[in-house]
Amino acid sequence: MKGKSTSTSSLVPGSEQPLSGEDLKEYTAADSKMQTAVDWFRKECATYEGRGLGRVTPALLQPVRVDVPGGRDTVPLTDVAIVGVREGTTLIVTALQDSHLSSIEKAIYAAKIPHIVPQREDARTIKIPVPRPTVEARNELVKAASKQAEGTRVQLRRQEQSSVKKRKCEKGSMQMKQFHDLLLKHLKEVDNIVENLRKRLAGK
Image (cartoon, rainbow, N blue to C red; front, side):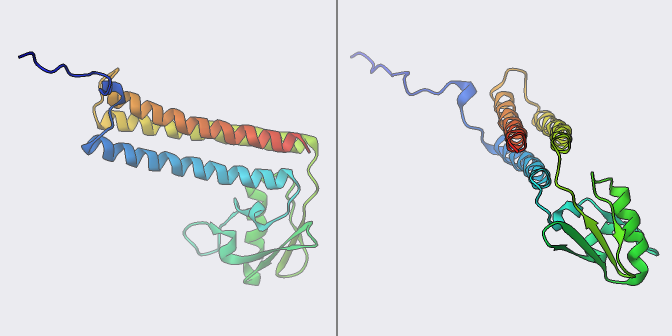
């Protein structure tokens, strides 16, 4: 009696088989870390877009870190001041303590945020008129985002290399291919974020 032939149509190539065990665990962890890096970059670009479109929000001062007298480390501006918006065009920074105003003013300058120039209004308040961005200013924002994009790409590549090394993936193996495909997926996300920002600001 002849043996029953086995169809090969349902077989999955080795390079396409799903990961399992420790490989899957590392893949999931790498995916999460890469996504965190991409999400952080997306948030940064949302801030750039807001500035490029002329939206005045407290988020413009997010990079500011204040060196409080007597403190060991710098702290976020929102730890020592209340940030608001007046008439949609001016940021208002109100220090929680009068003694912190000088440190806050220095910190805003030190952050080197384009077109952000603090002006003292009284003993506890700083106002910052925010000019509507010019074409040149929008182009600078896109350049800054592109520079940060490259930094994010470096983070993603390092994560892939770390995972491949940790799992001791052999060159050309199924594991290496899937980690590389994961990298490409997240690199594509970064590229799309930059391109969408460029389109949004170029049309204004």
